[in-house]
Length: 138
Image 1: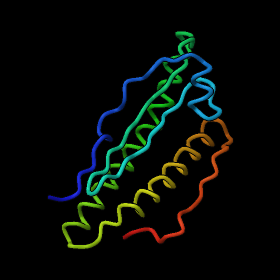
Image 2: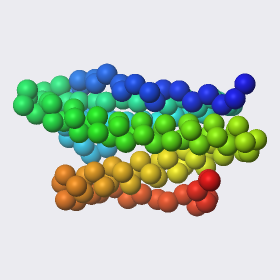
Image 3: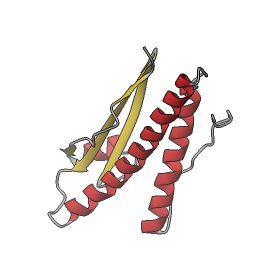
């Protein structure tokens, strides 16, 4: 049957929410955020993604904030595509796909990509990325 990985191939539709909800959901971000998580159920990995935007952004702010969050989604998507390819390659070779380890490394790689993006545009980054204790799967 194989391992099924879903929920990463299409960007989520943005949700417009009040600023107090953004502050609560987006962990310190004031204009919006891209959020993702996953659920592993046996041989199924399902990603859940959301783009949240403040509903009172001006017409001039909205495109920039939306593009910022879509940049994060593109980083996430690239890493999810790489994860899926690596898992399928391992399974085809009869090896343990090491899904849990690969997901931990994906979280780390995403954190580093977000930090690099924020350094590039804001010349600062507050992300602290904890490297997984397990070796990166081959």
